[in-house]
Every structure is written in C-alpha cells, then in structure tokens.
Image 1 (cartoon, rainbow, N blue to C red):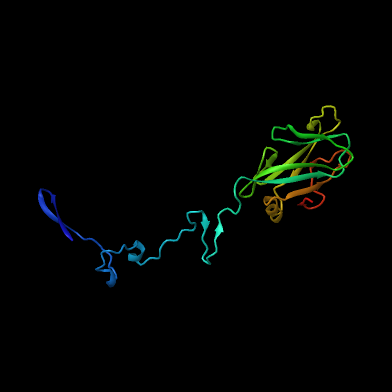
Image 2 (cartoon, one colour):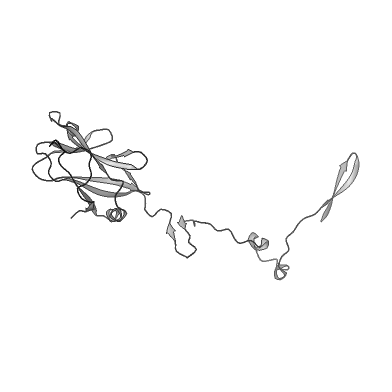
Length: 208
C-alpha cells in the first residue's frame, strides 16, 4: 500500500492505491525460491492444449491420434483395364490440357493404363491426369479415337472414371504399394467404345 500525491484545483491530495494480492497457501508464504505457476495461485486448473508441439492430438484416455493420418506427397498406382476394347481404335489417357498421354492402338485383347496419382491428406488426389468436378468428385479420362490423337478415327469419345470414391481399406493398401485395378466396360449401346461416365464392372480390387 502506498500514497501517491496528486494535485487537483491547485491543492494537493493524496491518492490511496490498494494492491489486490492473492493469498498464498501457508506452506508457500515464506518460500522465496519456488516458481509458482499462475494457475496454482488462482486455484484454477492448468489450461490444456489439444495438440502437442508435433501436431499430435491428445486424448484423455492417453491414446494419441495424428492430426493427419496420411503423410503428404505419397503416390498410388491405379490400373484402368478395358477387357474388350474395339480393335484398331486408339485409346489413351488425357491430361488437363486435353492432350493424349500414352496412346495405343487396341488389339483383340485387354488393354490397361497405369495411372500414378499423388495423394495428399484428406485424401485429395492430385495429378495432371486427375480432373475435378465440384468440391469432391475426382476422375480420370480415357480418350478414344480422335481425342486419343487419331485424326482419321470415326470415333471421338472419352470415358470418365471416378477415383474419389475408392474404399478406405483399398486406399491404405495402395499407399503401402499395392496396385488397384478397375475392370471397365468396353462397348457402348451402339457397339462403339464405351464413353461418358463409366462405372467399373466389378468393385476396385488389388491387382494380381
């Protein structure tokens, strides 16, 4: 407690300053060496941080869970297989510029394209061959005929294959190094190459 002289209207006054100090427990009153946390003085519980310095979520049960269960900059390989392509027709993957990638002329046997895709936490699928539609849909195009670079082809089509809905358990296997394969329909109702949104004939699986 102290007195601070001040002046008001030319006359001196004294202002009484009262300092509100917390009352320490009896066993700490004479301890000048201990460093007392602020929460110990106030009686409040120490603040809890939901994440530690490594970005790991703390659990009350003592179990820790990573903020992101998937590391960045990983890759998976997806195999798109057309069981009975139209012989003599050009097929290819297609990048974001609409250019054919890896064009081949189909023969009378199954045709496969391996697509390497970057996977970020989320998961998010990132690659020059991966297209997006809306906030969640991600897909890959297989170009056919003219779109695959064959200007003389009577076909000018492309097939859209979704990849955003890969089952979580298969995605884990792909991140561990397995190749995931989808068997795609080959023919449209008009007898030509299948196109537009194409659903696999069977669920995605680990390639043999």
